[in-house]
Length: 153
View 1 (cartoon, rainbow, N blue to C red):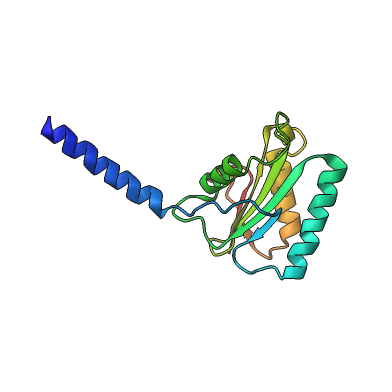
View 2 (cartoon, rainbow, N blue to C red; view 1 turned 60 degrees about the vertical axis):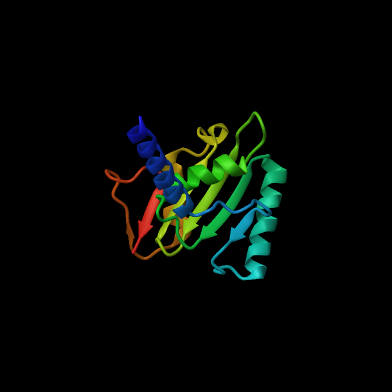
């Protein structure tokens, strides 16, 4: 019995260490959150205004998050944690979208709520990323990466 208690205590300590090592999800205060300083204040404000106007016109909510890294999480895991915490989109409609950029990891992803899956499927998300990003060399292995994820060199 003592052995089981020691095993459970060891597991709890190990799990706490892993959980503490994950990148925290920032609080959603604005539609554009840049934790890397990549965007100037003017650029972030202009993008924010475009997203507000889009939300006013269409109803769907879009947020942009730029982080240095998502490590040790994959961008997919971190993106899910962000959308779970931020709860983008209208309640009951789930029509929010997140553009997530992990700058130092050279990855970006679009997470889409269920209410937008028909409008913005993975194929379209990939095309948007490829067209908008304007990266000279994009490496994308469709067999090993989940849809909606791009890595660049």
